[in-house]
Image 1 (tube, rainbow over the protein chains, first blue to last red):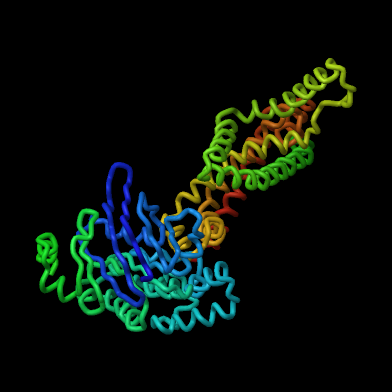
Image 2 (cartoon, rainbow over the protein chains, first blue to last red):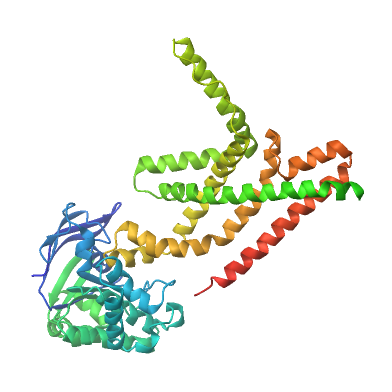
Length: 241
Length: 231
């Protein structure tokens, strides 16, 4: 198990957002988290790389207990790439610089080596010709593909996706999902929060339905989408499918 | 007219001194301001309190009073301390307590501008979207690296217009240094007026010299801002 989460609680002030999450994720597994907005799925994802500090519980990533204050979280984060809804590319840097910055400054990779890797990754996401462009010159779909390349440049073992297509115009969703599908086929461990049920069905090894801070139901895409047991899952799916 | 021409070289010399003291004030003020601005954003409560106390004090009291406090107040304090030391049986070791006037001028102007620049930097850093620091941290950068490579470069671009503003404000406020006899433009004008009695002409000339300097500078800032627009 590359991710082990036990009794995870997260409060924002008086608001309980996560109410006891238990979840283990295997290496190379693609887990898709679905659920209504406000169900805590993004908070859950952000706890996995400690962008949100858990209120209680333990999270073990590749053997490191990140809820232990002695753990070097910056080291563990190098193993866990994250892709955000709003891309969050660095606007003052070119595409190439966006991708090479962290490997050079954090992993101490040489500039030439980092650029070589960056160009390979750009080719992989289909943006070889955009290396020298600034983020503002790219479309949303292109920016998100650069963001994926930037995360991959750290050679992470796990990739987290926080609604990666929610901020995109509909015609750009496909190009981003295609990159994610390829990544899944290559055996990347992925945790994806999304509203793209087609993607969940096609790529997901496991689908988790979250509601009101709890994991209500989980199973294979087949089980969840065609044979949901819990009435809340059924209600949610009936609204969106 | 003759009076103006006669006074002009000295007044221009004063204008040069005003510019120098402003430039030095902005440079030292930026260093102080960056430290104080970041202190105000620190997670450490004590550090934050220190930054806030400094900023509040120097923004909340008049520069005029700060100049008096530094130039006259500090020597007064040193003298009292020294007298106390001697009264308790210590050997006297100081005879001259007055501050060098350039030192006092630079110190008061820098400390004052530092407080305003701290707020400019703080606002600049806070104006960067939260997603930027999250992206940087998610890549494994520590807080310092995220600030150094991602947040501050973006914040610096955004603080150029308010910094230009601060320079202009400061240039005008250096005229207050005339109160301690520091010979910048206002003080030089005062001296020339006393000599020639050409009150209206010379003060009007001084106003125009300030105006020319501030106007030129604000155009320069506009151009710099234009050139730095990458995105």
